[in-house]
Image (cartoon, rainbow, N blue to C red):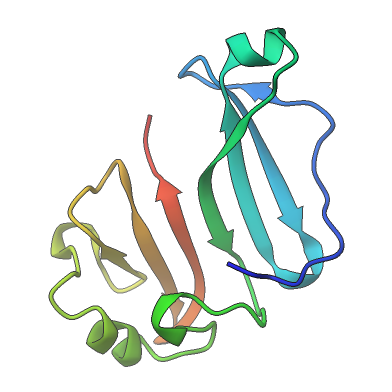
Length: 127
């Protein structure tokens, strides 16, 4: 995703997760985007920090668009039509639409309020 972001807020330290890896969240403040990253703790100890993206969240109004030009404020109907055949009914409800068959471990979730898209998350959901 090309966000055109110039201002990033991220903690100076990584924190340990229950999976033995080190985790950190980067916040693109003006774009309402959060990127969760992780790295192997043994590589960090060797000062060879290699981070991988664990998940991306869009938490509010933004110019960024998701795949298929889905954007914050779009209707629930548009998301349902766009992902017809890929919606995971077991993990979807009035407040969210879950996409994909790897739930609850990995997936794309769209969050709604009053039938309008308010946020989304794509990435790791469980350890």
